[in-house]
Every structure is written in structure tokens, then in C-alpha cells.
Image (cartoon, rainbow, N blue to C red; front, top):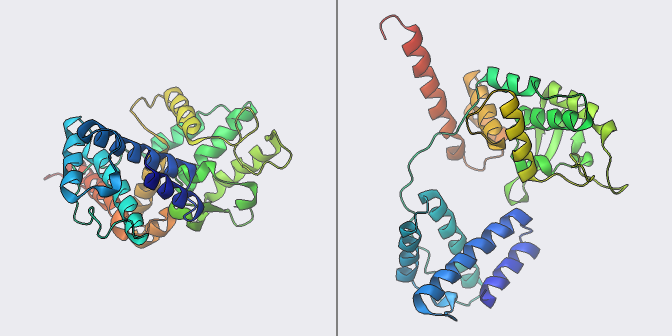
Length: 294
């Protein structure tokens, strides 16, 4: 990896305090751009010398290898951040990525679980052992608070306000917010805490794996797959599905979009507006099923 890329990653780690997951994504994206330069122009090509035409060629190179438009857009976003960093440091005189366009995205509505499916999922988690109580508490918290899985596994004991049924979460960009999680999630967390067996006496993490250390997002995904199969919900779903379901169920029940935006921790209202499309589709389904002249 070129030294300018290494400097950029160090800037993200020390000054921006980016999460390990974010750093891995940036490193993967920059490494791939370096691989493109080496394959196309030869080893030792300086990425900071790239111009707009070279970046457009990279976008086409990704598309030719079958990458989805959303993946290409993310890779280009990493390069935009990298070149903005170089511009601020005076390494480049102008930003070659400033006018770079993303490939056209096909609008995909998020995968959802119906309310009855969420209840079935939660109620079929076996809670006769500590791991099951932990899993029930995790899933209740994911759905009850609409948390990202990274926010869930990042929760510490100190982040809990059990009396107010609130948790403090650290979202994207290390932005903190208070999330209500509801009575059920709060009750299951209370049941889980006495069963925690941390490896180290001062382990701060709320949710622990079998080794007594912080659970990872990947592990939560695997556990969710097991519980979905047990509940007979075989369609593909992820921890983020519970967050999507949380938002849509709130809107279906009359919550306003601005409040849902705050609960989800979205910076822009336009990010939250995708759920209005989901709700409109559900309204149309209900109309066609129920109206005698539909």
C-alpha cells in the first residue's frame, strides 16, 4: 500500500477515531484501487497522481468484474475521502474525484419482517440457558431500539439507564444518541446481566460470547440465522432486517417521519424516507385486499 494511503488510514484511526469496521472497509477499498493501478499501469504507480479519467476507468473496471452498483459507489466514496484528505494536506493541487459520478442505483426496498413474524422469532428463542437469555435480550434490544448491529455489540454496562428504559449508543461517525428500547428489552437485559460471566473482572461489554469477551457483529448475524430457522422464517434476513422492521412498524402505527429519523440516528431525513415507500406499498396491498372495488 502506498504511503499516502497509509497516512490516510492513520488519520482515520487517530484523528477521526473511526471504528475498526470502518477502517477495514477503507483499507479494503484502497487496497483494491492499488491493485487496479498495478494491473493497469504497472507496479509502483502513485495513486495520488490519479486524474479524473483514471478514476472513471476504475469505476468501469469494477463494473466489468460484476460488482453491484452499491459496492462500486462505496468504493468510490472511499476514494473521495482519500483525495479530500490529500487536498487538505496539500499533496494534490485539486481533487480528481470531485466530479466523479456513482453508477445508477436500482432502488431496493429493505427486507422486512411482519409484526407477527418478529413476535414469533422472539418467542421461539430458547431461554433455559444463559446463552438463550442473552440472545433474547439482544434481539429484543435490536428490535426494541432499532439499533444497528454495530451499536448493539458496542453497548457497555455503563450505557444502560434501566429506570428510564434507555441506552446510550454510538452510531456512525461516533455520534452518540439516547435510544428508548422498551419494556420487554429492558426486562430481558435485567435477566441477562446476572448471568454474564466476563473473562476479565472489568469487562465493560454488555453482550458477551462464550469466552467472556465482547460479542461481534458477525456472531450476532450467525445467531440470528439460527433463531430464524427455529422460528420457521427461512427467507434471508439479517440483524439490519430488525432495524428496518422497527422503522416500518412505527410508521405503520402512525409515528411521524422526523421522530423515526431521530430514533434511527439518521443525519438526513432523505435516508429515512425509504420507509415511507415501504409503508405506501403496504397500504396499497391492504387496499387491494380489502376494498370491494379494488
